[in-house]
Image (cartoon, rainbow, N blue to C red; front, side, top):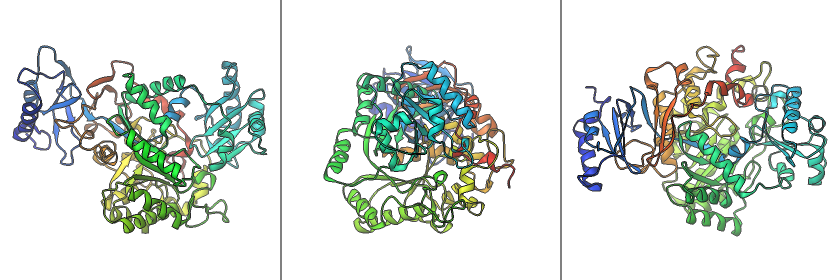
Length: 579
């Protein structure tokens, strides 16, 4: 038997026996056994087994069918995986979960490819929701509004003339308001589009949802995540109120998703580290430190996005040679804030899309480390859409985690010129999404979705990372295919590495005796199928803390979901005919 293939033998049997003798009496038995499986433990040694046993909320044994069968009792449920794959519960390391959950119930423009289609969609939604005081939602695409990539107020007035409307761009970095909304906000604008921190002018007047409705929407979002194999998320935005929503669901027995929430109010927000803000950070960390609701992370923005020329670039944008974006913080101020947060023991994550933003963030992290000395920081940079080659080795050298969202680069887009590639310019395309370059330096990499920017389904991200092709297989062989990742690398980013950045590697992230029983059962072995078949893999069961959170229902049709994904987050199709 191949030692990599099986960990039953002496090591697994001894480990299982040790855990059992330490935690269980001789008469105790497993509550659930999954056998005849490919149990992908996600351990760094590549260990694979064929069965796993769960008792209560913990894994009690991982090994051969024969070894795990020793835990079977009269009340044990036994699942025959029929050669399917068992993975650790998948961890999405970058979501905006409350926003995504709410947007599931609002107007969706993510697959509208033209201004006229946007108007038609909005009119239909308004007719179907006559009692909504505001029309909210959006997820609109920049490329639906050529040639500028931005909509205008008159268009939204035509679609929604009778009540206020405020619609988010797919990336959350712009909001589009009609005249009714502008009147309520007391502001004027010819375009009705507000970027980055200016969004606050509109957001501050949008009525807040009731708490119970928010809880209902979040519960729906959790169910959708569980159905896609997601058992934990790291939220890239949130505050004490949002953390309390998760805690309330937990107290009601409705939380089947582990949450770590970074303190940030969203795009455009600048931290001040005022006494009040620091007190909020400390309160969150002290109050939420359990296995289900956690804090202790602070999220920064260093720049905006390429699509609106607000990313911070080393050289000007190709579409506007006089503009290269601006950093959210002066270098000295950013370094001083990081140094203070580091002194207090906080983790940090920073949104940095442009190459100058990536460099400024790395500089700030290095300054904090120099001021405070060595520490187990696990600090992250988010997105890294463009990275100068000189900065690639600095991730590993500084211990900075590269946080990537694979499907940002690869999903269907309308034909024709696209905002991202036009603004960046062809000369810099090779510096986009340099996953392999960063991985080869030895830097740790984690993966996520940025939901609701793109689907929360991790298997979409897996497919994108291992192919760099769109779901139709374009461009053939992949866009800059040398930047592809291996399946093992991608799964590590959704499992053990993701658990590590959440400081939960001793509890989740790998399938080992003694850890929480967070696991996913697939209908096929991803290592033995073509990349295209990854898109068709079904989630048979999702377990969170030993509790079945999803099973036996109609699996999400991720292929059908793909046309509804945002075009401006992706690169594959737009480059298929331009190489």
